[in-house]
Image 1: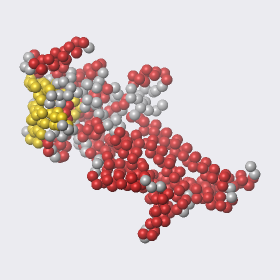
Image 2: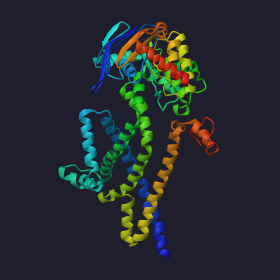
Image 3: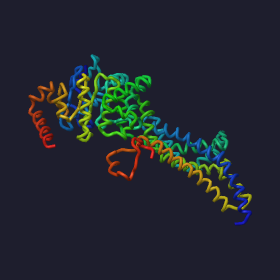
Image 4: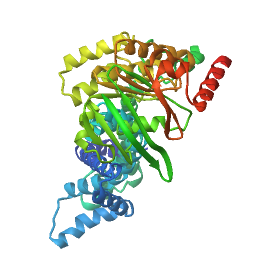
Length: 245
Length: 249
């Protein structure tokens, strides 16, 4: 490899990484946080069968899941100004990604809510808790544990999806890479380079997911002590740990 | 203390309860016996509003309630005076044994955490789990989980505890530890209404027996009389079958 190419790779690395840290990651984090809130509310109104809200929720999920996110970005950024609504690139991207991701995540959360045995709810009532207290303290925490792996999946998906924001002039990693390519005419190495940085980000997220899952596992681990003993030496487990290996 | 009258309940076209009534006095241990599908569990669930009865009246502490149109407020008020022990324990899986017991005290009754923990520990001590405060349900055996559930019921000092086949989900060797705890409560004068298949528990511990079949009460009365001298032929044959089953096992 010639020296010019190596220089381009080295020079561009920080130029690409910087918007990754200052734009891609904040865009992902903020969008996902909002998406989670939307998802929980959307899933709850369906789970609780609140009459009109339930229909609105179904409609929202139907429309958002049925249209490409790129089209949604264009509608909000290039379309809405026609209706007199001007939104800056970054907030527009946050808006679209959180609404889009919220629709998908709501289905994950809804499925997780429905997987919690009815007895948890009944036991809550018998202890004198109200519906909302049971949801907040008993059912949702358990459901979020179940939903955690698929939601982590969505988060990783969203991180990569933010590259689409380049289309509405958000100067995130991919947009910056495109600009460098336009200047240097080295598409192959530079696009591989930005792909590599995405890969590193996603690897970190995957590791984080594993750590969090282990933390969350405390109450789910040993179902059957007898079976554990039968496996015997295969799984050495500290007495009483029930989680940390 | 508690009286229910003429409870009717249908699921779809099938009528599960065809007008059931029973009376529980303070200090009574009432066993509800009967073959599977006779409506015992449904009756208990209607009494604690986990199912909505189609018809029926409840008199609790002298107050009369229509079971088919209870207000949310009344349900909440009555549930504070009662406790329910489920067949499959239904412990909160994301809470430790102690948190399971204190949840209703802290959240529903707004007790301070310290006081709730103290009561919670006492309740767990009473059911013989003083070394399991911080265990999650998944780390406990079935018998231990059911004892936590009983501690959870005890903690609120209810006027009556409902038990829905509390030993049916347990291995034979684990039913003993749960029954021992229930015996202890009966001896202390706790008012209990117990749906059970444990004929020996019913005979030794209960003060009254209600025998149900096909959505009706077939025979009810003091347990001494019931076991020594059952009136109905159907009751006699039911008791005989149970005796035989027990002898075989």
